[in-house]
Length: 71
Image (cartoon, rainbow, N blue to C red; front, side, top):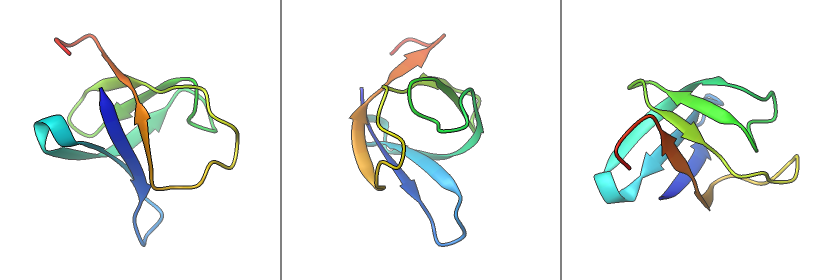
């Protein structure tokens, strides 16, 4: 599913799912650089993010996959 990842003014990362009109903070990351691994959202969802170069500018829209859910 297409998602947008952004950083707010406080430096907190969040993930927005337009299809569900859902925005949640990213509370943990499998990889320190975030890309190419799993992230956990504030609502408990686990999302697999694509591999991207380190230093990729935000906000960005990417194709991600919800793991352990129906999407």
